[in-house]
Amino acid sequence: MTSSPVHPFDLLAIDGLLTDEERAIRDTVRAVGDRELRPHVAEWFEQGAIPARDLARRLGKTGVLGMHLTGYGCAGTSAVSYGLACLELEAVDSGLRSLVSVQGSLAMYAIWKYGSEEQKQEWLPGMAAGEKIGCFGLTEPDAGSDPGSMRTTARRDGSDWVLNGTKMWITNGSVADIAVVWARTDEGVRGFLVPAGTPGFTAPEIKRKLSLRASVTSELVLDDVRLPADAQLPQARGLSGPLGCLNEARFGIVFGAIGAARDCLETAIAYARDRTVFARSLASYQLTQAKLADMALELGKGMLLALHLGRLKDAGHLAPEQVSVGKLNNVREAIDIARQCRTILGANGVTLEYPVLRHANNLESVLTYEGTSEVHTLVIGKALTGEGAFR
Ligand code: TGC
Ligand code: FAD
Image: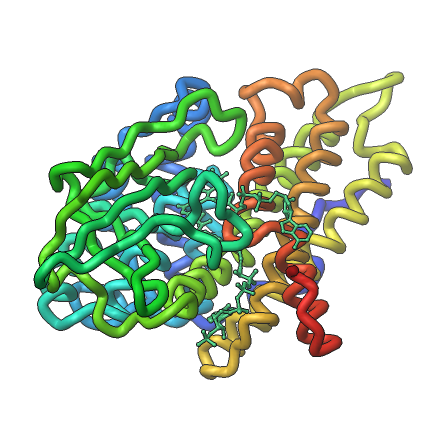
């Protein structure tokens, strides 16, 4: 006896938890993703190249760049709406969500939160429109999980600053018009705005990635880069400056990872219903149904967690360790779902004809950036015990 299949999100009546406005924003981003991005994304991934400028403009037109910020051409939406946009973009590819996360939650947020009025006026409207691209340079070749050990320096020379050092694994780096660079000064860590083309500043692209191939990743090399005094972000003091930005981007990933997982599960369910093995539909076997049911549980729980954290954020009550709970859980479950879906697709699952191994490969980066699983485990461990175990 057969009946109409239910979408995994409908098992938990997720739609009923969203407002009309949230559903409308989600549907808009999903439609843009399906119409303008999904048809090209396998090719971008295969070639390891994206039309970044064109994409930024299209995403700017859709209104998702810095959408949760207010003023300066930003849409000023709720955190949940921003999360849902991340979810829909990452359902297409984590690389596209990364472009939006880095632009809106890292580069724009740093300027919006810590910048002077002149810096905000100069950069934010163009970045919201996608006319200007930003990147965020915190990680270094020898300082990833422990950004406090960064070696990049900024020293005073008269009223100027002179920056030296190397940043590594920087999303959007070689296509960026403006780099937010974090450096050590005599007074602690400070943030600087480094425009592309500043003498001594180069951003070579990192090639041969096996993950996040539909995303630009670069080194930032700073060789006696001289900046005027007003290039410093005046309100950022110490490591809490960059870490404050990370809370924003990690929040987007809590939702985004669910998008990648949803796309995998939808693909696997459709494939299992269509595929005949041993003279019956693959979906009709109990082993397949056990896999699908387990994945639907984790997907639904992850979505509920994301929405709960989103409601806390909109109420102004979201703590960094709660973001760690969401990032750790949802990325870990998403990568498990992607790998399990790959098994349902058999050999077809290893090709770019289907999105599942592309998502699984992307999620390897998502598991690592914005704080590795181990870092978020330790953040939660510290919250639970009061004991830091990072060092
Ligand atoms: P710790 O001594 O604990 O803290 C130093 C200062 O920072 C404050 N703080 C925070 N502030 C805001 N938000 C947070 N989440 C914060 N966590 C800590 C803290 O209160 C203190 O302030 P103050 O005023 O007392 O100085 O720092 P620690 O050196 O022990 O490090 C803690 C640790 C390991 C959790 C942190 O460093 C960390 O999160 N490491 C992971 C690094 C990371 O996530 N890097 C990501 C780089 S960007 C990126 O990956 C972009 S990917 C592209 C995309 O998003 O798509
Ligand atoms: P490491 O810090 O060297 O960690 C290696 C391993 O050690 C990990 O498993 C880690 O969890 C573990 N480990 C670390 N500390 C501990 C501990 N105390 N206890 C136990 N285990 C520990 N960075 C930016 O600044 N901007 C960007 O735009 C950006 N984009 C990125 C894009 C991509 C595609 C990737 C892959 C990375 C990007 N990153 C970016 C860098 C990313 O944030 C770092 O890779 C990440 O923070 C981890 O640093 P690491 O790679 O140096 O690993």
